[in-house]
Amino acid sequence: MRHRGAAFKVGTNDVRESPALAVASRLHQRGAHVTVHDPHALQTAAQRHPELEYADTVEEATRGADIVVTGTEWLRFREVDPAVLTGVAAQRIVVDLRNVLDAEWWVGAGWTVHQLGRPSRRPA
Image 1 (cartoon, rainbow, N blue to C red):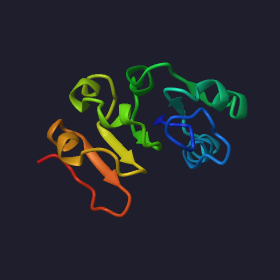
Image 2 (cartoon, rainbow, N blue to C red; image 1 turned 90 degrees about the vertical axis):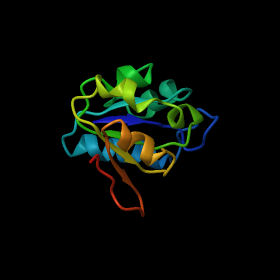
Image 3 (tube, rainbow, N blue to C red; image 1 turned 60 degrees about the vertical axis):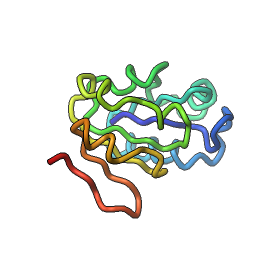
């Protein structure tokens, strides 16, 4: 499991009451191997949740992932080219908890996309 986003609000390193980090922690407690990436909040996230692993880049966080979770609305995550991550992830499944990804773009690159409140999308 690879998790993108730890800060509760884009543009900050504040992880207090972060829903994304709470999800990552809960998944870890249930036995998932979780690696978190966030452009600004890695240090503060690691202080609050040292049990999780952390990666400096999206690609590093995605390496070997069975599922990628996007939990924060960082512009950087919207702009990630799913084709670049296709060869990095073990499986092409993304769960977008903030509905920030362009599902058609991801599906076109061969990913199954799950977004909250929307039908799941799968490649043809």
